[in-house]
Length: 68
Image (cartoon, rainbow, N blue to C red; front, top):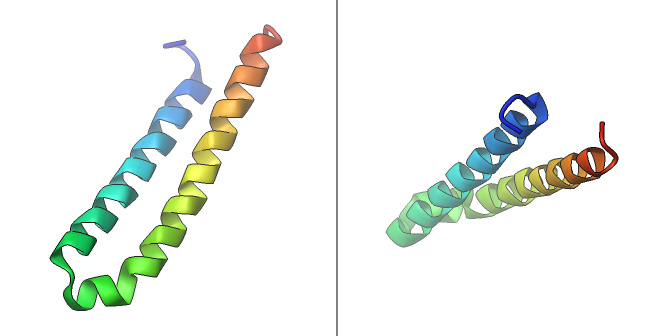
């Protein structure tokens, strides 16, 4: 697993999702103009990044289950 480049891509994708989620949570807790302006954009970005991360995880499990 540690020698697999796809594993590192998945870890990076998950970290991107966490970073987007944290920026959204921080903006939500502070409120104000930033939250009004960027809340929906951050949520959309998180959903897209999360879908990519899940697709990569599914591809990883599928490929490793086949033995390649």
